[in-house]
Length: 221
Ligand SMILES: C[S@@+](CC[C@H](N)C(=O)[O-])C[C@H]1O[C@@H](n2cnc3c(N)ncnc32)[C@H](O)[C@@H]1O
Image 1 (cartoon, rainbow, N blue to C red):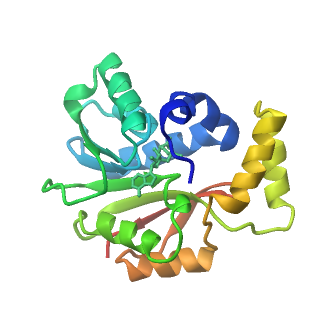
Image 2: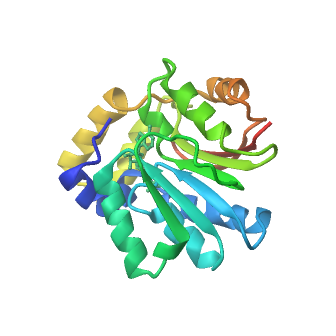
């Protein structure tokens, strides 16, 4: 997994829009659904909050929602913290640096965007999903976006081409090509559904697909 520290954190915001085709749209569509689903006053758990993109998008569409921004990278959260301060959002966000542990708060929905694909399917993915599920009441929505296993033999190559069109350099493309094989642990659709069922979620519904990057929404069983 990339370590999301120092320079990797500092240039994350520039880098990610070139590495994930549809990054902005993924966040917009996630936010649109939460806006439709949640009441005006709600608390949203954001697992792997990174530099704060998920929360910044959501905070704009509802002035009352509160957020828990959890991540294991102190450097990513430091940037998120600065962004929240600059945007006047700090009083609405609790930052949690470190592994996901019980927050003790009532949580209405959870997000885990572009995180789970970095964890191997050797118990680590399951442990994180279980930790998320344990924070959610029955029927609470859960939004998950991940790189999933290629569904055609030309998908990954096309994805790299799309990244070049988005401004990724040749060196960046080489690194991404390497990372796609060595730094990600993509599941196929069937295993993703199985893992979600095993960890206490219902059927995932696909709402976003940009080549390998896939967004699903499900509910806590
Ligand atoms: C690609 S970034 C996604 C950030 C944000 N969700 C977004 O959409 O921009 C992945 C983030 O997941 C974090 N991460 C990786 N493993 C994690 C874990 N087990 N628990 C929480 N965060 C994790 C990384 O530190 C990094 O900030």
